[in-house]
Image 1 (cartoon, rainbow, N blue to C red):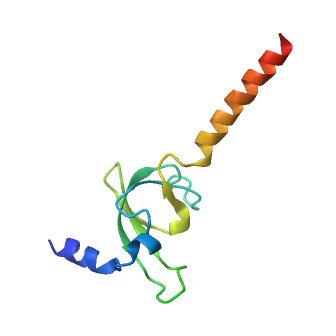
Image 2 (image 1 turned 120 degrees about the horizontal axis):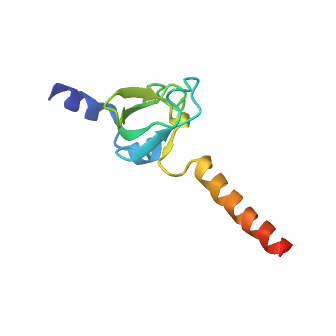
Length: 104
């Protein structure tokens, strides 16, 4: 039970503004570890490390679907399903239909 108590103490009362992805499904992207990019899980904790207005050291704790947990920069975490990959696929499909329609 101790980790849960410590965990809640790290999240400020203003966490919706500072950590809007807390307790949500997220996807990791844009990290230097290519093996981590694209993995999904839940943002279970948030550590505001910078203090004041410096947010560069802040980290989400992401519990992956595999059970592993990692600290990840907020810039490298996004809501699951909002990645650029999904919108590109839709865009290509629409262009393909227009192209076929013009040839017939």
